[in-house]
Amino acid sequence: MNMKNEHEPAASGVVTEVSGASYIVIAEDGTEFRARTFPGTKTDNGDTSLVAVGDRVELKLMQTGTALSEAVISYVHPRKSALTRKRDVRRNRSKEKTQVIAANIDQLVVVVSAFDPLLSTRLIDRYLVFAESEKLATIIVVNKMDLDDTSETQEMMKPYKALGYTVFYTSAEKKRGMKHLKKALAGKLSAFSGHSGVGKSTLINQLFGHERLKTGETSEKTGKGLHTTSNSVMLLLPGGGYIIDTPGIREFNLSDITRDNLRFYFKEFLTYMPDCAYSSCSHTVEPKCGIIGAVESGRIDSERYESYLAIYESIDRES
Image 1 (cartoon, helix red, strand yellow):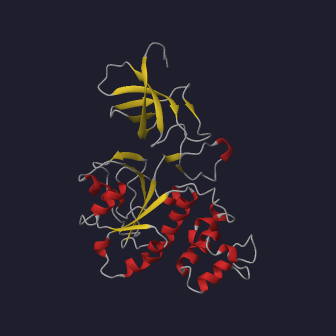
Image 2: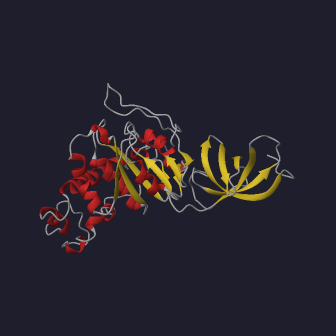
Image 3: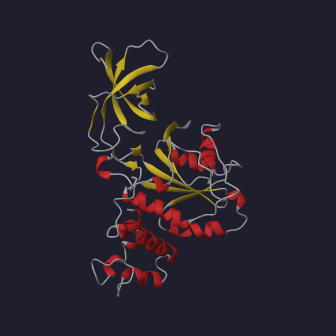
């Protein structure tokens, strides 16, 4: 591409959409640009995707005369956080860049459903392990509360509220529970994630007051959600703040989580780890384990501990 005499002074902006080699960038003054990279695009983000949704970038503006302003991306700022896609173990990893799903998010919004599909605390725990490893604030949204005619769901969520996690109960279909959620999202860059079928896209549409994302439904044949999200997209909320809709947790890269460091991402463990007889205690079978003792005495929720064991056993198989 011939850059000579084609660009105007630089502008700064945020990438809101990625489509192949083309990017939509909103500048600080609100101007929307269609942008692309070129061989001179610089980044300090290592061997990862050059540009991702949520990236802060510097632009060189182009003289094109088209309705949508065009630009080239000259520099990608360092990311403060990144959701990365899990690598395909069948491929040669050494030749493969880490694919970034979303960058620079302030909080992870975990969307689960009370029913259809059934609420899975094991899934919530996997999200929380990821969020703790990335030092991300987390909001848990339990959707489809109109399908829960018992108090069981709120009982299941008590351990998370006790640990300080923010929990909202919503019904996107019935437009319930939106007010407090909107307030928690204002002024933040929030990544929404959850398995298909939990009503994530419907929930996001309700936050906007109109349809912004395609919605799906639960398959009658499999009982699992039908996929409606394929790529990350960043949306500006009417009341301020941004939402990035992302794929599910199993698409996230958990490769930095090992059997040795997993224990640090169950934050209730931190209080009782000094009580372990061994500094390298895995909290699985060792005698005089402070964590096992806390579970047996009810100071640590037994279901959370079972999730720890399940993730611990799965790590080698998923790496």
